[in-house]
Image 1 (cartoon, helix red, strand yellow):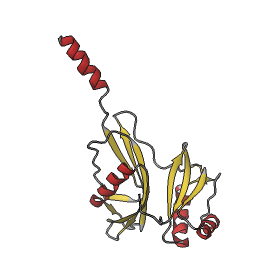
Image 2: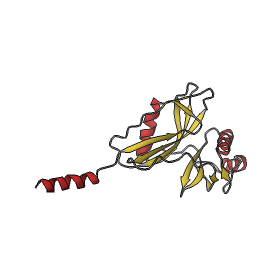
Image 3: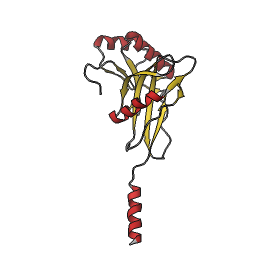
Image 4: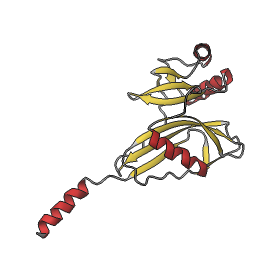
Length: 189
């Protein structure tokens, strides 16, 4: 009887949910006070990629845009109230990638894929005229090597074209993709 009970507990333990670890990649923006993300009840891994606007004291004014599973975005957005960026030159905005990784397995994902070939440029809620201006003005094209400097320059160029636009870096099939987002006309998700 005890052997059967031990076997049932052991098998159940093998199928228990692995703990979720959280890692933040803030690029060149330095954190003075790191955000605290609740992983209580979280059972899956994922990635949230977002742009935040910062106040001069380094606190987050607002989340300008975000990409990723809705439940993970909600956790990240809530946690941003607890963080603060630091440094002599706090940027107006910061590109942040938050990784939710299951278990104690392999190390957290690496920083954004700078030094790799840009796969494509995508647009979401961006007018045709702004799309044309971005394509002409950002200085990086699909097929070119994407560097941290080129991403920073492209991000500033996008904001100069239209302050309502944001440039985000994400991965698709392991390759870097730049996504230019505007304001949605409907309810935010």
